[in-house]
Length: 286
Image 1: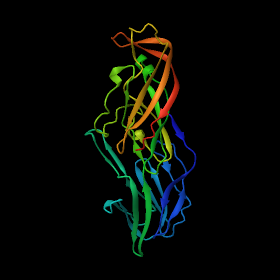
Image 2: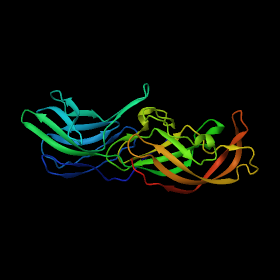
Image 3: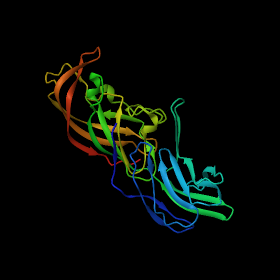
Image 4: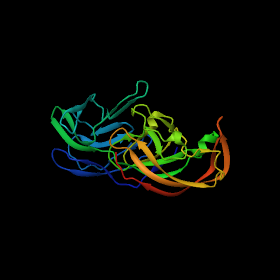
């Protein structure tokens, strides 16, 4: 799996006690590291807000008197409440919860939240935008598999240019050469169907990060009835499932080359070389 650090940009827009300050972001690698927002112009006890993996991380100033931090959703209801033990300057609020054992999951509603720090001297408020913005940025042949069928898989790079974390749970295709790959997305984002990453936590993509995903199906698997083995080109669509918003879509044109590799017990094959000749993302955001 490949994680790519994107260019530096603003990631959180925050307002303390009614004032609004733009916070410059420091990017992570998409694999659970922190996307932080140093240099907040806010007054009061909230020193910094960042996203780390599935959590919102709130940093408080030293010698604060804060006893609890609450996160209020875009609809005005309480999303989460957390207590802050005396002397602690860091607290975390879980934004995502994936439960593959039962197929369940929780995902925050995208929008602008209100972060409220409550203490003996009163409360301080900060607006925090939590809105993923995903798009497919690149497609290439998956080259790290161990089986002949893996030559027929594609690695899809997805960028999160937004301010909140989310995850990819499935990749399928439309009009791919292998009809068995032209499936509907699985129902239920709580059961990721991925070859890469194989670690559920690493399926989460943080704000201002890019991650590479590989589905479980093999779109570039061909039948032996073709006389032009590994000398063919084709165009089809890629569909990426995300837990909120519409699926991501892209059209890709590829040419297969190299040597053929037999697949399984059926008279089918994959090709050792796949060249992506054209790629066009559909621009559908999560």
